[in-house]
Image (cartoon, rainbow, N blue to C red; front, side, top):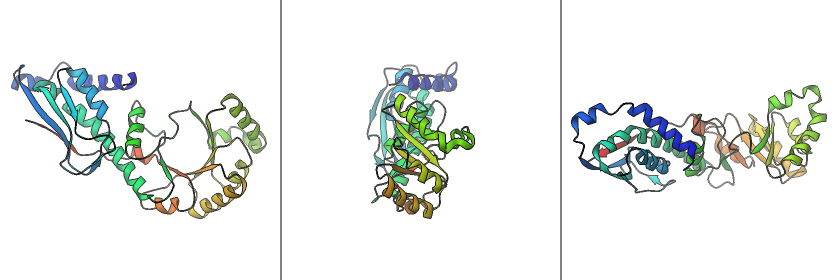
Length: 283
């Protein structure tokens, strides 16, 4: 378990528990033991199991957490995600925090699964973006993978992605100076991916002539523009991958996939995923 996640769980528990669960202390004997389960109230993809284990580990090592499913599993409404056993007060201390983490992460996994299913039968890969909850990036990216998607770059450090603001910083000389800058990026970072964002087909045509480029992001292009970009890529630099992004929904994603592009990145996977409705039953 990464220290970042351990710290996130610690913070979540501290803000919820505070000085103690005054209700459980009043109603439940300190020595009481219980069993319980967490179940889904709707069809959903499982994600976040390791976080629940960490939540209850921090609360009470006497709590036993037993998963009854695996990350990436599609469950129907009413099915059990995991079972719990231990001190009753401890189970209730972790209830809301566990449901919050699971609900959010399973929501991301489930939405990702919907997009993956929408492009089934094509070779298109569904990618996430950096539009994520601060502090939750590792968890949210794992949830995307649980839903069948793949991760784009983790941050600013593990890939070169030249966007419009980077190009704007070059002023009117961007076309003449960009190839040399990209060559320097490859020299200093020989192993990492280099991707350039294109808003126009003119940019796509130019970027395809820079041999160090691995991928071109087609930003908010129409279906016809994407098809034209694919034809240019196939003719000039067949090894360059094309990624589509911007304005893509479940309603139009299959049409985008059929243009011949290789990848589709969606911020919605993480910033707009509805939480999964979950419940914890104690018995």
